[in-house]
Length: 356
Image 1 (cartoon, rainbow, N blue to C red):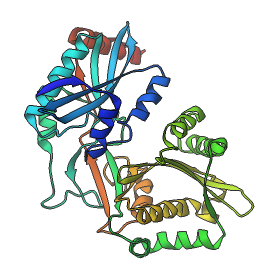
Image 2 (cartoon, rainbow, N blue to C red):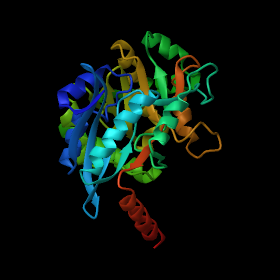
Image 3 (cartoon, rainbow, N blue to C red):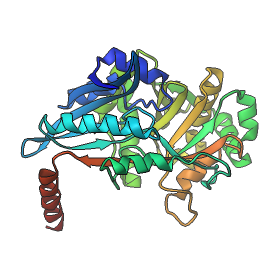
Image 4 (cartoon, rainbow, N blue to C red):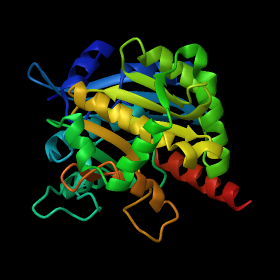
């Protein structure tokens, strides 16, 4: 095996074919990071003439001139292949250590345990516990703060027609969709000049529900980077007199559609149920355009009825059946110290700062 630098196109060709790909591990996201002051690198491992592992990596000085290195949505490799994991991260650690870096954060799109729609471990399903073992043997430390949600909820749209998917939804969800349609709610895609409408809705929702919204600049950058390739859609639900009701951002990457950000005008939520119609519009789009997975994205932990965020999971679950719905659990985020003395010093100062 050989550890090598690769170019963005080589990386793209490898990533597009991998089952572990992620839209956050793309040259487009690399450009977004560059626009925000990060330096971008591409590395790979070749066995003979074949690329068998690769990563887009970004770095930025964060503490006393030393840099944090980060692989958003990656690296892309088989984490149960112990020999490959050891080889790849040994070489990557050496590179970072000799290029002014003190740590490496990874965020792989790699599933840990196969689960059911209710979040229970699936009988005779896969369990990739060796992936975690291999990372820890390399010196990786689990992180509590996740760049990508560890638990996600998906709808399997592969080989399903829109009629089948609609019939298999919960009755209450179907009723909400019909109510929105009867009320005359219209769904359309926003253009770049209209992203301020999207931002206004998400900003108000973030204040109401106490989460951090992205900036308008971020949404515009994502539009510029992905829209021409048909890989991002900003959708708006509105009345026939163009009153905005709800909006959502979707990534269309590989064989899945990812529901990423959204918001709704609280005044109209119960009257129109527009948030349900936006989801149904895009689920139909997924089925009609051969997308295999409709990814509702993050849920806050495993389903727990006593959790204050259980409603988010329950909303997403309503669009699925026992057959088509699934909770996915990723292996999570990890950090690898590459300069141990500096890393420990940074952690100590961070703790002291938090106490103050």
